[in-house]
Image 1 (cartoon, rainbow, N blue to C red):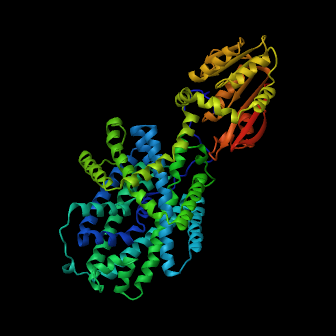
Image 2: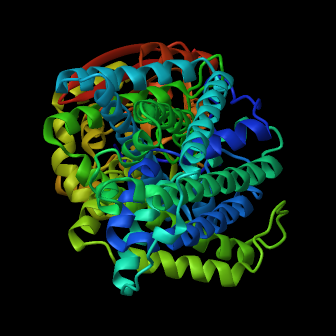
Image 3: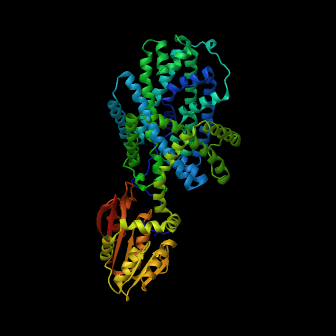
Length: 638
C-alpha cells in the first residue's frame, strides 16, 4: 500500500506443476466442435425463421462461411503462439497490456455466463422430461457444474475423454434428426419472400450466437502436443463439422415443416421446435431428441468448463491476474481457477432462478463477444505488420479482404445492439478494474509511482485507518529502533513512520526515507520542515544503490512486499544493507476486501518459507483490521 518498488524482470510464476501436454488433433477437434455446439441449434432455426421465413436458410449458409473464416483467423493466430492465453495473448501482443487485460477479462466473464446459460438450458430440457421445481433446478444445475468440475480436476485427459464421448453423441443425435426428417423434405413448399435488409441483419445478429466458442480451444495450447500445428487444424475442422451439421439440421427442419398442421407457424411457435418437429416424423422421437438436446448441451458445457480456467492461469503467469490463479494440482490442472469458475457460475445460476436474470446475460453476451472477435481480427492485421518474421504454420488467405469483410459484418451487427445493452456490457468490463489495479501495484513500478504521485493526498488521509499509532509503535519496537541509530524507512509513503522514527532515534541518530513517488516524498518534506526535524534524509530511490553494505542499524518497511511479483531480490538487498545484529520489521497486507494477495503473503507458513529459503528466521504476527489481513514480519540479522 506504499509506493516502494524495485525494477526487475517480471518472472513467470510456477505455482505447482506445469500443465501437461497430452492432447492431440482428435481431442482438439472434439473440444473445438463441442465448445460451439450448444442449445442454440435447438431454438435459433425457429427464431430466425420467425423473422425472415425460409430465407433464413441462406443466412445459415452465410453465417456458416463467416464462422469458417473466423476459425481461420483464430487458426493463424494460434499457429504463432503456444501459451494458454488465447485471445488475451493475441490482443496483448498486438495492442499492449491494457487492452490485452480487458480482452482476457471479457473472455473470462463470457465463459462464466456461457457455462451458467448452458447448464440452465440443459436443466430446462430435463424439466420437460422430469418436472423440476425452481429449487430442484438450482440443485441439479449446481450439481452438474460441480460434477464436470470434479472430472476436470482429475486432469485434462479425463475432461478430454468425457468431451469426446459427449461430442460424438452430439454428432449422432443431430445426424439422426437429419436422417429421420430427410424423407419428409419437400422443397416446393419453401417460399422465399423478399425482405428488407433490416430483417436480415436482425436475424444474422441472432445466428452468430450458435457459433460463439471459437476462442475456447485456444486456451489449451500448453496442454497440446505441437500446438502451433495441431490447434489451427482442430479449430478449422471443428468449425467445418459444426457449420455442416447446422446447415443440414436447418435444411431438414425448414424443408419438412409442411408436415405440421400449421406449417412454419407451428414450428416457430413451439417451445422446443426441433423436438416438436421430430415427434411428427416418428412417434416418440421428440422425447429422444429432448434427451439428446440435454446430452449436446452437456457436451458444450464440459468443453467450456475444461478450457476456460486456462485463460486466468495464463494471465496469472504473466502477472496480469493474482498468482492465486496460477496454482496447479498434481494432475497439472489450474485447480484454483477451476474452483473459482465453479463458485462464480454457481452465483450466476442462483441469481437466474431467483431473479430471472438470464435474458439480460444473453443480451449482453452477444455484443460483448462480437467486440472481442473484432479485436481478435484487428490483432491479426497488427501482428502481420508488427511481427512479420514469426513463423506461422497457417496463414489466412486473402487476409486483408477477408478481415475487412468480417470486421465490417461485426460492426454492422454491433450497430443492431441497443444502447442500454452496450452500457450493461461496459459494466462487465469495469468489474475487472480492481484486478487490473491490484496487479499493476504488484508488477509495474511506473504505474505505482504515478498512482501515488496523483493520489498521495488520498493515501495520507486514509492509510492511517490500517496503520495507526498502535501499529506504528509495534513496527518500531519489532525492528528494535533506538536512540542514536541510523534507520532506513524503505517505502516511506507520506512519512508516517519517518516522523516517528526521527523522534525515537533523536538528534544523534538518522532516518533515511526512500520512496519512488515524488508526491509522497514532498509530503514527507512538508512534515519534516513543519516539525523542524533535522535528522531525516529523503531520497527518491528504487534500487537502494547509493548505500554501502551494513549501513543501517535497523530498517522498517510498511506495505511494500505486496507490490512485488517476487520480493526475494529486495529482501536480499535490504538485508545486505543491515548491520549484523540489526533489527528489521515489515508490515505487509494479505487478503484485502476479498482480493487475494501474492502467494508469499497468503498465510503464515508461506511467509516463513519465503524468508527461510533466503536464510532468515523471522517471527510472524497476524491480525485483521477492516476487512484486511495484516502481517508483522520481524527479526534480527545474524
